[in-house]
Image 1 (cartoon, rainbow, N blue to C red):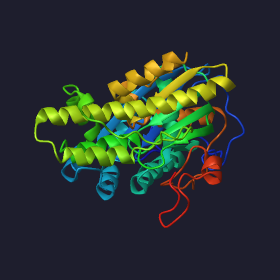
Image 2: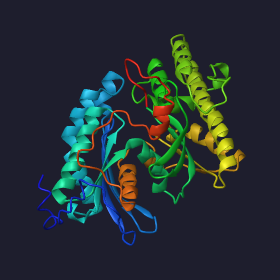
Image 3: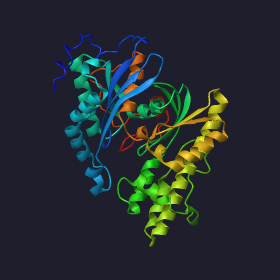
Image 4: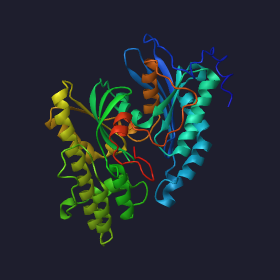
Length: 386
C-alpha cells in the first residue's frame, strides 16, 4: 500500500496527526475516511461534512463476517481479528474508489479505538494511523458509541442537545447528548444489553446466528400473550435496564416448546417484553429531560433500533411525551464506518484530534466521569463494566 505517491505528493507535515490542532476552518467542507473494526464487520466510509452542517455519505463499504461465525453461534474474537487483517486494505480501497477520491483528497482519518473486541479494534486503528502518517493527515480515535450517538445525523439534520437511547448487542444506555464529546449517562444496563438478550434467546430457540433478526422474523407469526415473562427492576425509579432475568426465563421456556407456533409465540413475547422495558425507561428519562430542556428530540440508535416493533413502541412513547422521534436510516443502525467518519469529522471541525499513539480500548464509556464516580459494576476480578 503506497499512500505517499497516490494523487500527487503528500501534504506538508505539520504534525497534525500527532498533536491537537487549535482550530479548523468552518468555511470549507471536511472529507474524512472512517474505519470500523470493533466486532464482526470490516467497514470503511468516506463522509463529507459541510461548513453549515450538511452531511453527505460518499461511500459506505461493509464486509460482514456472518458466514465465518455462523458455525459457532456467535462471534469468535480470534476469527474476527484475522478477517479484519485480511479485509481492511481492500475495504478501504473500495470505499475510496466508490467516493471517487484519492487519499490526497482527504482532510482527516478516523478509526474506532474502542470499545469492542480489542484484537479487531487494533486492526482498524493501526490501518487508520498508517493512512494518517503516510498522508500527513489529522487522525481521530473515535469512540464507537459516539459514532452511534451521531448516526441519526447521517439521515437528517439533528441539532444538539437531544435525548439518546443507544441500544445494541453490547450496549443499552440512555444519554443526554449536548454535543460531540459532551454526554451524560442517565441510565444503563446493570447486566445484559437488549441486543444480547435478543441474540442469546434466539440461540436457545435454535434460530442460529445472527439471532436478533431471526427472532424478529419468527415473531411476525406469533401471539406473545400466551407467555408471561418477568419485568425487571419494577421497584426502582431510575432509568437503568436489566435483561438477564428475561433472558433466563425465556431460554428455559424455549426448552419446553414442541411446535413452531409455540416458538413464534415466545419470539413475539420476548420482542414485546424488550420493547416495553426500553419504552418504560425511555419514558422516565423523557419526563426528567423535559423538565430541564426546551428542546424535545428523542433519538434511538444502535442495532436494535432496526427492529420494527421496538421502533414503533418507542415512537409511540416519544409522541405521548411530545418528543420528536428520530432514528438513523436502517443502513446505519448496525455497525458501519459512516458514523465513525461523521464523528471524526465533527471532532475535526472543533479542532479535536488524537495523538498517533492513541491506544485501543476494549472498554470506553461515553460519560467517563459518571463511570468512575458511579460504576454500574464495582471493580473486581473482571474489572468495571463500561
